[in-house]
Image 1 (cartoon, rainbow, N blue to C red):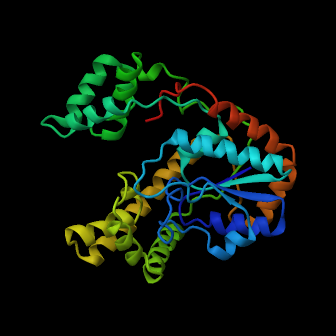
Image 2 (image 1 turned 60 degrees about the horizontal axis):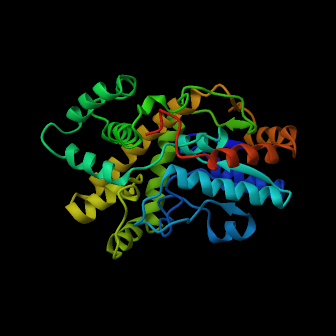
Length: 326
Protein backbone atom coordinates (compact mmCIF):
# COMPACT_ATOMS: atom_id res chain seq x y z
CA UNK A 1 0.00 0.00 0.00
CA UNK A 2 1.13 3.59 -0.56
CA UNK A 3 0.45 6.69 1.53
CA UNK A 4 0.82 9.92 -0.45
CA UNK A 5 0.42 13.62 0.18
CA UNK A 6 2.22 16.91 -0.12
CA UNK A 7 5.25 17.87 1.95
CA UNK A 8 4.55 18.70 5.61
CA UNK A 9 1.15 17.01 5.50
CA UNK A 10 2.09 14.49 8.18
CA UNK A 11 2.70 11.39 6.02
CA UNK A 12 5.78 10.14 7.84
CA UNK A 13 4.23 10.52 11.29
CA UNK A 14 1.07 8.74 10.17
CA UNK A 15 3.07 5.91 8.57
CA UNK A 16 5.08 5.40 11.76
CA UNK A 17 1.86 5.32 13.78
CA UNK A 18 0.47 2.62 11.50
CA UNK A 19 3.69 0.59 11.85
CA UNK A 20 3.32 0.88 15.60
CA UNK A 21 -0.13 -0.71 15.34
CA UNK A 22 0.67 -3.21 12.59
CA UNK A 23 4.10 -4.81 13.25
CA UNK A 24 4.17 -6.55 9.86
CA UNK A 25 4.41 -3.15 8.13
CA UNK A 26 7.79 -2.13 6.72
CA UNK A 27 8.16 1.49 5.60
CA UNK A 28 9.49 2.19 2.10
CA UNK A 29 10.57 5.81 1.53
CA UNK A 30 9.47 7.38 -1.75
CA UNK A 31 11.60 10.50 -1.40
CA UNK A 32 14.18 11.54 -3.98
CA UNK A 33 16.36 13.33 -1.42
CA UNK A 34 16.21 10.86 1.47
CA UNK A 35 18.37 8.55 -0.67
CA UNK A 36 21.40 10.77 0.13
CA UNK A 37 23.52 10.00 3.15
CA UNK A 38 24.32 12.86 5.56
CA UNK A 39 21.35 14.92 4.31
CA UNK A 40 19.43 14.10 7.45
CA UNK A 41 17.92 17.20 9.02
CA UNK A 42 16.64 18.96 5.91
CA UNK A 43 15.03 15.82 4.50
CA UNK A 44 13.31 15.09 7.84
CA UNK A 45 14.50 11.48 7.84
CA UNK A 46 13.29 9.18 10.61
CA UNK A 47 15.32 9.54 13.78
CA UNK A 48 17.77 6.84 14.91
CA UNK A 49 15.22 5.80 17.53
CA UNK A 50 12.52 5.42 14.87
CA UNK A 51 14.86 3.38 12.69
CA UNK A 52 15.56 1.06 15.58
CA UNK A 53 11.87 0.62 16.22
CA UNK A 54 10.64 0.24 12.63
CA UNK A 55 12.20 -1.19 9.50
CA UNK A 56 12.80 1.54 6.89
CA UNK A 57 13.95 1.13 3.29
CA UNK A 58 15.41 3.33 0.52
CA UNK A 59 17.08 5.79 2.88
CA UNK A 60 20.83 6.60 2.77
CA UNK A 61 21.56 4.78 -0.48
CA UNK A 62 24.34 7.01 -1.91
CA UNK A 63 26.72 9.78 -0.89
CA UNK A 64 25.59 13.36 -1.61
CA UNK A 65 28.21 13.96 -4.31
CA UNK A 66 26.76 11.14 -6.41
CA UNK A 67 24.01 11.50 -8.99
CA UNK A 68 21.10 9.13 -8.41
CA UNK A 69 18.71 8.23 -11.22
CA UNK A 70 15.08 7.20 -11.22
CA UNK A 71 16.11 3.86 -12.67
CA UNK A 72 18.54 3.27 -9.78
CA UNK A 73 15.70 4.01 -7.40
CA UNK A 74 13.42 1.58 -9.19
CA UNK A 75 15.98 -1.22 -8.91
CA UNK A 76 16.53 -0.46 -5.22
CA UNK A 77 12.77 -0.49 -4.65
CA UNK A 78 12.50 -3.85 -6.40
CA UNK A 79 15.11 -5.33 -4.08
CA UNK A 80 13.39 -3.87 -1.02
CA UNK A 81 9.96 -5.11 -2.03
CA UNK A 82 11.32 -8.56 -2.77
CA UNK A 83 12.96 -8.70 0.66
CA UNK A 84 9.78 -7.60 2.40
CA UNK A 85 7.83 -10.30 0.60
CA UNK A 86 10.46 -12.87 1.58
CA UNK A 87 9.95 -11.98 5.25
CA UNK A 88 6.18 -12.41 4.86
CA UNK A 89 5.72 -8.74 5.77
CA UNK A 90 3.93 -5.91 3.97
CA UNK A 91 5.27 -2.73 2.45
CA UNK A 92 3.86 0.71 3.17
CA UNK A 93 5.27 3.14 0.61
CA UNK A 94 5.34 6.67 1.98
CA UNK A 95 6.61 9.88 0.43
CA UNK A 96 5.92 12.78 -1.87
CA UNK A 97 8.12 12.24 -4.95
CA UNK A 98 5.43 11.53 -7.51
CA UNK A 99 7.68 10.18 -10.26
CA UNK A 100 9.41 7.77 -7.87
CA UNK A 101 6.00 6.53 -6.75
CA UNK A 102 4.88 5.94 -10.34
CA UNK A 103 7.92 3.86 -11.27
CA UNK A 104 7.19 1.60 -8.31
CA UNK A 105 3.39 1.51 -8.55
CA UNK A 106 3.26 1.06 -12.32
CA UNK A 107 6.47 -0.92 -12.85
CA UNK A 108 7.43 1.52 -15.58
CA UNK A 109 10.25 0.62 -17.94
CA UNK A 110 12.56 3.62 -18.08
CA UNK A 111 14.57 5.16 -20.92
CA UNK A 112 18.31 4.63 -20.87
CA UNK A 113 21.04 7.21 -20.26
CA UNK A 114 23.57 8.56 -22.75
CA UNK A 115 25.95 10.64 -20.60
CA UNK A 116 28.11 11.95 -23.46
CA UNK A 117 25.04 13.11 -25.39
CA UNK A 118 23.61 14.72 -22.26
CA UNK A 119 26.90 16.49 -21.48
CA UNK A 120 27.05 18.00 -24.96
CA UNK A 121 23.42 19.13 -24.72
CA UNK A 122 24.10 20.72 -21.33
CA UNK A 123 27.04 22.57 -22.86
CA UNK A 124 24.81 23.84 -25.68
CA UNK A 125 22.16 24.88 -23.17
CA UNK A 126 24.71 27.25 -21.63
CA UNK A 127 25.52 28.88 -24.97
CA UNK A 128 23.76 31.83 -26.57
CA UNK A 129 20.26 30.76 -27.55
CA UNK A 130 20.43 28.08 -24.85
CA UNK A 131 17.40 26.01 -24.00
CA UNK A 132 15.00 27.69 -26.50
CA UNK A 133 17.36 26.71 -29.33
CA UNK A 134 17.42 23.13 -28.05
CA UNK A 135 13.64 23.18 -27.86
CA UNK A 136 13.44 24.23 -31.51
CA UNK A 137 15.69 21.30 -32.35
CA UNK A 138 13.37 19.01 -30.39
CA UNK A 139 10.41 20.38 -32.37
CA UNK A 140 12.08 19.10 -35.52
CA UNK A 141 13.18 15.73 -34.16
CA UNK A 142 10.15 14.97 -31.96
CA UNK A 143 7.25 17.45 -32.22
CA UNK A 144 5.14 15.44 -29.76
CA UNK A 145 7.78 15.58 -27.03
CA UNK A 146 8.35 19.28 -27.72
CA UNK A 147 4.65 19.97 -27.26
CA UNK A 148 4.74 18.27 -23.85
CA UNK A 149 7.18 20.78 -22.37
CA UNK A 150 8.11 24.44 -22.62
CA UNK A 151 11.07 26.12 -24.25
CA UNK A 152 12.39 27.11 -20.81
CA UNK A 153 12.27 23.71 -19.10
CA UNK A 154 15.93 22.83 -19.39
CA UNK A 155 15.77 19.48 -17.66
CA UNK A 156 12.93 18.07 -19.76
CA UNK A 157 14.21 19.47 -23.06
CA UNK A 158 17.71 18.11 -22.52
CA UNK A 159 16.37 14.73 -21.41
CA UNK A 160 14.04 14.41 -24.40
CA UNK A 161 16.86 15.24 -26.81
CA UNK A 162 19.27 12.93 -24.98
CA UNK A 163 16.92 9.96 -25.45
CA UNK A 164 15.97 10.90 -29.01
CA UNK A 165 19.56 11.32 -30.14
CA UNK A 166 21.01 8.50 -28.05
CA UNK A 167 18.41 5.90 -28.94
CA UNK A 168 17.82 6.98 -32.52
CA UNK A 169 14.07 7.15 -32.06
CA UNK A 170 11.68 9.87 -30.82
CA UNK A 171 11.44 10.27 -27.07
CA UNK A 172 7.64 10.34 -27.33
CA UNK A 173 7.61 6.85 -28.87
CA UNK A 174 8.68 5.24 -25.60
CA UNK A 175 5.65 3.92 -23.79
CA UNK A 176 2.22 5.39 -23.05
CA UNK A 177 3.47 8.25 -20.87
CA UNK A 178 2.59 9.35 -17.37
CA UNK A 179 -0.88 10.48 -18.39
CA UNK A 180 -2.02 6.83 -18.51
CA UNK A 181 -3.17 5.36 -15.20
CA UNK A 182 -3.30 1.60 -15.50
CA UNK A 183 -4.74 -0.81 -12.91
CA UNK A 184 -2.17 -1.45 -10.19
CA UNK A 185 -1.67 -4.02 -7.48
CA UNK A 186 -0.71 -1.28 -5.02
CA UNK A 187 -3.57 0.41 -3.20
CA UNK A 188 -2.95 4.15 -2.78
CA UNK A 189 -4.33 6.34 0.00
CA UNK A 190 -3.85 10.11 0.14
CA UNK A 191 -3.93 12.93 2.68
CA UNK A 192 -5.97 15.79 1.14
CA UNK A 193 -4.23 19.14 0.63
CA UNK A 194 -5.20 21.91 3.04
CA UNK A 195 -3.24 24.94 1.73
CA UNK A 196 -3.42 27.22 4.81
CA UNK A 197 -2.55 24.38 7.19
CA UNK A 198 0.30 23.11 5.00
CA UNK A 199 1.69 26.60 4.43
CA UNK A 200 1.84 27.18 8.17
CA UNK A 201 3.31 23.73 8.78
CA UNK A 202 6.02 24.31 6.17
CA UNK A 203 7.21 27.48 7.90
CA UNK A 204 7.08 25.92 11.37
CA UNK A 205 8.97 22.88 10.20
CA UNK A 206 11.68 24.78 8.35
CA UNK A 207 12.38 27.06 11.28
CA UNK A 208 12.44 24.00 13.57
CA UNK A 209 14.93 22.34 11.20
CA UNK A 210 17.14 25.41 11.43
CA UNK A 211 16.96 25.17 15.20
CA UNK A 212 17.96 21.52 14.95
CA UNK A 213 21.14 22.41 13.05
CA UNK A 214 20.20 22.46 9.37
CA UNK A 215 22.54 25.34 8.52
CA UNK A 216 25.44 23.51 10.14
CA UNK A 217 24.52 20.35 8.23
CA UNK A 218 24.58 22.23 4.92
CA UNK A 219 27.92 23.81 5.84
CA UNK A 220 29.42 20.36 6.51
CA UNK A 221 28.06 18.99 3.24
CA UNK A 222 29.44 21.91 1.24
CA UNK A 223 32.86 21.36 2.81
CA UNK A 224 33.02 17.69 1.79
CA UNK A 225 35.71 16.95 -0.85
CA UNK A 226 33.07 15.99 -3.40
CA UNK A 227 30.57 18.62 -2.34
CA UNK A 228 27.01 17.92 -3.42
CA UNK A 229 25.81 16.55 -6.73
CA UNK A 230 23.76 18.72 -9.06
CA UNK A 231 20.62 16.90 -7.92
CA UNK A 232 21.38 17.02 -4.21
CA UNK A 233 22.08 20.76 -4.40
CA UNK A 234 18.49 21.33 -5.53
CA UNK A 235 16.95 19.86 -2.37
CA UNK A 236 14.43 22.14 -0.70
CA UNK A 237 16.17 24.36 1.82
CA UNK A 238 19.63 23.13 0.91
CA UNK A 239 19.80 25.20 -2.28
CA UNK A 240 18.82 28.37 -0.47
CA UNK A 241 21.20 27.83 2.43
CA UNK A 242 24.00 27.07 -0.04
CA UNK A 243 23.26 30.47 -1.60
CA UNK A 244 23.73 31.99 1.85
CA UNK A 245 26.99 30.15 2.50
CA UNK A 246 28.53 30.37 -0.96
CA UNK A 247 27.04 33.53 -2.46
CA UNK A 248 26.64 35.66 0.64
CA UNK A 249 22.86 35.92 0.46
CA UNK A 250 21.37 37.19 3.73
CA UNK A 251 20.25 34.29 5.90
CA UNK A 252 16.73 35.56 6.46
CA UNK A 253 16.29 36.10 2.71
CA UNK A 254 17.47 32.54 2.07
CA UNK A 255 15.05 31.24 4.71
CA UNK A 256 12.13 33.15 3.20
CA UNK A 257 13.01 31.82 -0.26
CA UNK A 258 13.24 28.26 1.04
CA UNK A 259 9.81 28.51 2.64
CA UNK A 260 8.29 30.04 -0.50
CA UNK A 261 9.82 27.37 -2.75
CA UNK A 262 8.60 24.60 -0.47
CA UNK A 263 5.08 26.00 -0.54
CA UNK A 264 5.18 26.17 -4.35
CA UNK A 265 6.49 22.60 -4.41
CA UNK A 266 3.56 21.44 -2.28
CA UNK A 267 1.16 22.82 -4.86
CA UNK A 268 2.96 21.02 -7.67
CA UNK A 269 2.79 17.80 -5.66
CA UNK A 270 -0.95 18.24 -5.19
CA UNK A 271 -1.43 18.90 -8.92
CA UNK A 272 0.48 15.67 -9.66
CA UNK A 273 -1.32 13.45 -7.16
CA UNK A 274 -4.85 14.69 -7.74
CA UNK A 275 -4.62 13.68 -11.42
CA UNK A 276 -4.29 10.03 -10.41
CA UNK A 277 -7.80 8.55 -10.20
CA UNK A 278 -6.49 5.50 -8.34
CA UNK A 279 -5.73 7.40 -5.13
CA UNK A 280 -8.40 7.16 -2.43
CA UNK A 281 -8.42 10.42 -0.46
CA UNK A 282 -9.07 10.21 3.24
CA UNK A 283 -11.67 12.35 4.99
CA UNK A 284 -9.77 15.18 6.70
CA UNK A 285 -12.60 15.65 9.19
CA UNK A 286 -12.13 12.13 10.52
CA UNK A 287 -9.35 10.24 12.28
CA UNK A 288 -6.69 9.77 9.61
CA UNK A 289 -4.88 6.98 11.44
CA UNK A 290 -8.04 4.91 11.85
CA UNK A 291 -8.90 5.46 8.19
CA UNK A 292 -5.40 4.40 7.14
CA UNK A 293 -5.47 1.30 9.34
CA UNK A 294 -8.91 0.40 8.03
CA UNK A 295 -7.67 0.63 4.48
CA UNK A 296 -4.54 -1.36 5.36
CA UNK A 297 -6.61 -4.15 6.88
CA UNK A 298 -9.05 -4.17 3.96
CA UNK A 299 -6.30 -4.49 1.36
CA UNK A 300 -5.01 -7.68 2.98
CA UNK A 301 -1.76 -9.55 3.05
CA UNK A 302 -1.86 -10.62 -0.61
CA UNK A 303 -1.00 -7.13 -1.81
CA UNK A 304 2.76 -7.23 -1.23
CA UNK A 305 3.32 -10.24 -3.47
CA UNK A 306 1.41 -8.69 -6.39
CA UNK A 307 3.07 -5.32 -5.90
CA UNK A 308 6.54 -6.89 -5.76
CA UNK A 309 5.88 -8.71 -9.01
CA UNK A 310 4.93 -5.45 -10.73
CA UNK A 311 7.97 -3.46 -9.63
CA UNK A 312 10.34 -6.38 -10.25
CA UNK A 313 8.99 -6.70 -13.79
CA UNK A 314 9.54 -3.01 -14.45
CA UNK A 315 13.04 -2.97 -13.00
CA UNK A 316 14.06 -5.98 -15.05
CA UNK A 317 13.18 -4.62 -18.48
CA UNK A 318 15.57 -2.97 -20.92
CA UNK A 319 16.29 0.75 -20.64
CA UNK A 320 13.43 1.91 -22.84
CA UNK A 321 9.93 3.32 -22.33
CA UNK A 322 7.72 6.03 -20.88
CA UNK A 323 7.96 9.00 -23.17
CA UNK A 324 7.00 11.51 -20.47
CA UNK A 325 9.89 10.64 -18.16
CA UNK A 326 12.44 13.43 -18.27
